[in-house]
Length: 216
Image (cartoon, rainbow, N blue to C red; front, side, top):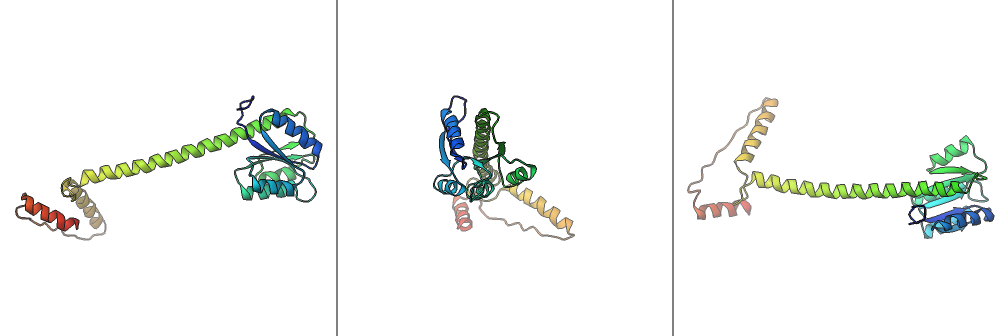
């Protein structure tokens, strides 16, 4: 954990102004983060392909690949990565485009305070951790539901089958008869019930033979 309580994370800084990335790298590094810098969108994308970063800060206007193009490429490779756009040319159009492509937020340059960077990093890392926790809880709930469904099926089978032969019992017969009566009544149809009397049912030999025949 860092001094601010954030989880230590790897951050990619992308800007053609090396002086800016150096300052930002120093600020974020002081909070315990591993920071990698790139001076172009192409360089950043190559670094990202080798080591997908959870957080990326990128300028929007750079020679060659723009920040928006980099954002789009990153989201295609790893949708969970959070990208913050930095721009000195903030406008409604550019912000809408950035958000439409999946940007987390944008910062206007020059920054009013370098604390904006640490604050933004704190917020985005909180979101990432929250998403991870929600995913973990969802997977845990799915597993628990699967176990519950299997347990319910076992209990259901135990309640409707005879423990010795594995055949359906009187309870299952009554439930099935009720469902059949409702179904055929709904469509105005008739149905038949066939009863079979088995001689010497209580005989161990007869019962075993019947069980083997049915279970085979």
